[in-house]
Length: 266
Ligand SMILES: NC(=O)c1ccc[n+]([C@@H]2O[C@H](COP(=O)([O-])OP(=O)(O)OC[C@H]3O[C@@H](n4cnc5c(N)ncnc54)[C@H](OP(=O)(O)O)[C@@H]3O)[C@@H](O)[C@H]2O)c1
Image 1 (cartoon, rainbow, N blue to C red):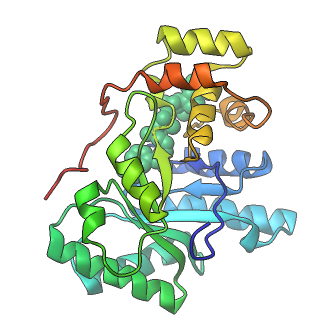
Image 2 (cartoon, helix red, strand yellow):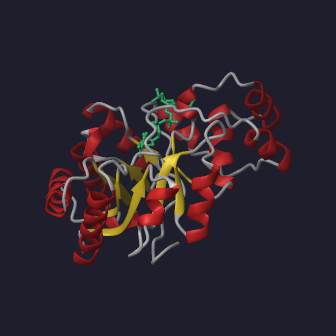
C-alpha cells in the first residue's frame, strides 16, 4: 500500500497475445477470480482488455472498483505527448481511468524522463489514473525522481534475475516491486533445484516460482493463454515455501535476461 494504492498482489499479464487470445484470457481469468490485469500501449491489446472487463462487469453486475487495470506509456517523448498517449489508451480501452499507469521504460534520457514523469503526476491529479509508477527503472533512474515517488517499479524478477540492487533501492523508498516474467518465460523449468522443490511440495513448477515472488513481497503477473494454466497459476495461496526452498531459489541468480534489459540506459 502506497499513497492509498491497494494493488492485488496477483494478476494476469497479457503480453504477446493476439486480440482474440487477450479477450478470451481476460474473460477466463476474471471468471476464475483474478482481479488484476497488466497490459500496455505496446501490447496493442488495451482495447481487448477493456472490452473483456466491461463485458464481465455487464454480465456479472460487479463493480469496476473491484478490479485493477494497469497500462503503460510506450514512448517517453514529451509532457504533451505523454498525456495525449494516455488519453488515447483510455479511449481504446473504453475505461474512465487506469488503476495504475507506468512509464514502460526509462529510455529517453534524464530531461525527457523528468518531463513525462511530471505528466503522469498531473494525470493522476486530474483523475485519469489512480496511481503512477515506472518499469525497468534502474537505481540511477530512481535516484533522479525528487518529486512524487512511483508507487511501483515493474522489473524482471525471478530466481535467475534477482536485481538485488534495484529491489533494495525500491524497498528503501517504499516503492512496491512488480515482477514481470515471474515464470522466467518457462525457460528454466528443467532446473534441478526447481524440479526438486516442486516435487517436494507436490506442486507444479510455475506455482513454485510464483510463491517465490509472493514470499519476497513482489506483485506477480504471470501470462498464460491456456484456461487450465490461468487457473493453476492462481492456486498459490495454499502452500508455503520454507527457508531452505527460498534460499535454494535465491541462489540461482545468473542475470538471465528473458526479454529486454534497459535498467542501465542513460
Ligand atoms: N514492463 C515490461 O517491460 C514487461 C516485459 C515483459 C513482460 N511484462 C509483463 O509481465 C507479464 C508476464 O511476463 P511474461 O509474459 O514475459 O512471462 P511469464 O509470465 O514469465 O511466462 C509466460 C510464458 O509461460 C507460459 N506459462 C504460463 N503459465 C504456465 C504454466 N503454469 N506452466 C507452464 N508454462 C506456463 C506461457 O505460455 P502459455 O500462454 O501458452 O500458457 C508463456 O509462454 C507479461 O505478460 C506482461 O504483462 C512486462
